[in-house]
Image (cartoon, rainbow, N blue to C red):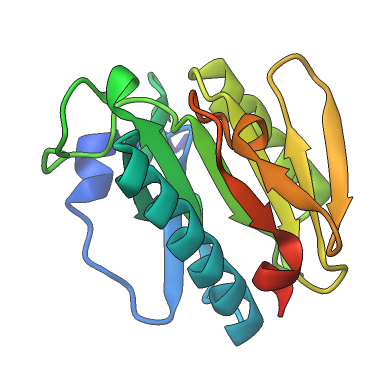
Length: 186
């Protein structure tokens, strides 16, 4: 007897009930669960979302989200939920989201690295974001107090807590963004 695995679409994934205590992503049609992150993870993500959000709102560049679903691959579908993300109005095409997952990668995806995540997992996410049109990915290492800025051309720059990230690091089309990493890591 042979069993056939049924892969979910993004729409079917969206209809699943919430599971307390876990976060879920859809990876090539398969549901992947992860434990809820530790408080330091949430604290760093909240600080990043606040600082990115204030700049984006003041400059009217787009929208900043936290743990929202972005459909980055189709057939089979992959829905990623970056810890923090920025998507420009230029790419989004409007000033609001619909009820569905965002049908593209964000301009900036921020992944706060948890101990349970492997290097291979992170490389897959980075590749998916860029293949779907993402412009920057930040890999945030709370314990090391570092952020690695990845670009679609394959270059990467790692910044320590004494550094300041700029508009170019965040894929903002206007100058003026300055994020001292000391304010992120406390």
